[in-house]
Image (cartoon, rainbow over all chains, first blue to last red; front, side):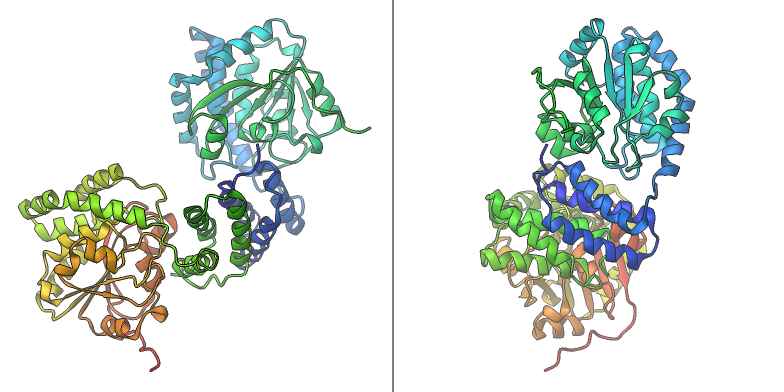
Length: 296
Length: 296
């Protein structure tokens, strides 16, 4: 998905949030924000919004080095979601359609998104669980199709999104043959996106094979991922991509992908043809062709 | 009120709204937005947000000349509010405390604010009337103090805000001796702010003395107003300023002002010490000193 002009105020807001995470010095914040505005004024809008955010974030990183401003928040949500997990698992198992319930839980977890919501809290998570358990899923076809494809597959790749959310994804993985599942995380911190540290912390590494995607960008910007990851991405029977940033960065890629997300932005809603707030399970790009391999 | 870093994404969003009002050409919109971002990267943040918006708007005007992109919207809301007026007047007159009810109506009209709400519609106006009629007013002291001062005053200056809202202000003026009221409008179009054309169109000029403030900026930036207006501003017993932009541009001015508004922005809420959504009647700057006169 390209960057629309509507995304520009959000990119500026995102940058401000990031700058504030790394310094309390208001004069310094202002200096960096002026530079960010100048940077954004020259940026290529044919890039996806996460690619632009990534450029801005790297710019901020040049000042502050490899800090992880969301570390505390990531740990907080991992911990909180782990306390919920036993009851949620029981709820899914007891439901009339556990696969459908597990997908809804995985969508609910997607509310923990520091890129879209700068102030999400525990109460929001609990409310979103109830909302998603009764919401309309767009589309039912996506759910049915995913379930059917899972019956005849030799491998499934899940592109994870955020810390905390990664715990909810365990409920979806419960519905799959674990030995054929690979779960991809970011290889370095960006926003509150899940990394290997989060996968270990939440017990995911004991459940399935977890790999880094070789990148520190939001979403999955393939030309910044490792060749090992791209090979896995190309060769997996089923790819499931969680969250908005994965949609933004992969919606135009030429391979079939199941996107599972909660829409939290009116620009993405318009691009997808749904409404803000909708819970989405959709298969895109039915074609067989693969993302071009990296040059060796 | 100074411009906070939180205002920057909003300034960018405001600029985008303004650019879209004057051209549908997306390439041209992008070109101007890039220039706006560059401009904002250099701007003096000690100015108030309306002053910054004004600079951005003037910049856009350089391309498009003296267009009035909000003309249609202003006429639409003037017309709609005039259809409501007879029933609202009856409701105020029949209420237990007509002065209090009239103030609430005047606050409700303040929802018609294209600077803060890019998509306000008729339904929002009707909902806001009901909300404001039952809401807590911050502060009761402001209401009591204004009523008391009105008993012993020789002149009242009201600084108007938006088209449509100007109709609701007639209900407040009903509670005043009309012969001592002066109502100030913008001297040229900016956003959906009321101008003399709106005052004529809504019958306000037949009720009270209406003057232009000599400026085409949002709010009341005194050093851009005419010397006639500043004289009136300095010499009036009571000054009532409607809306957020008047608060932003006059909150630090050294004369007593009654601010009447609905807060629609978390930055202003924080600056005022109230919450987003609150209905405000507050007297600020009790001191007697006047805004310095313009050099002759």
